[in-house]
Image 1: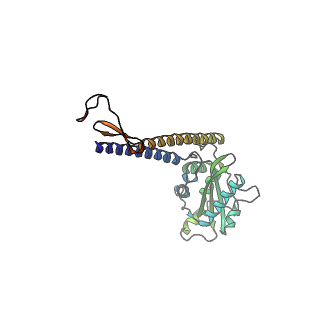
Image 2 (image 1 turned 90 degrees about the vertical axis):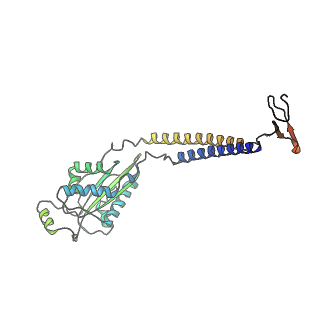
Length: 287
């Protein structure tokens, strides 16, 4: 009978442990749910993807692919930071600095340069499609004299909402890249108007409706508050259930002696109760 009681107590403790563990796992899963899941995140668009899509358009047009340049990447990054910090969307910032200011600032030496901008997009293909649908952006992408490219993608608050800013810088270095076939350059220069250094042939590309998952700021705040309230209520319930489970698991089980439960009284004196209907070899049926 004692072995049976020990087994029952062990099973209750295991059950209590599993209950507590499951609650803890549920709380952990709740904390892993990102409250800002609808916020714009720059990692959904990558520079490599945009460069590949840009080069695909150039290859389809019979042009050489652009090569990444770290100085142009730095210029694009600095320009993207300036856009978010000063809350503007243009090639010239409010202080009057043109786009090529950030290119020159890095020490990149060029014969011609250009810039494409995008904002509020949620994926790379849509950005390139929009650029190609705009004559001035398309002109930059398909400019034959450009040999190098630098991209930056930053997420942050713009105006009253979170968004993604994309800056694409193009450059024709003073010294042509050796990998570019001279014959190709000669053929292209005869049919293409070369950009003057420091000039841009395009206007900003803005797509206001390309992030349908981005709610209004007030809606996001309400959503976050609701998530927080649910988390607090759920955590309180879990804590209460856990305490109850622990309390139950720690309660001593009655020991049986010859069919009678023995509950320890004061100073270790056992108190023996008869059980109606209980039978044993030593006691008759009855109270």
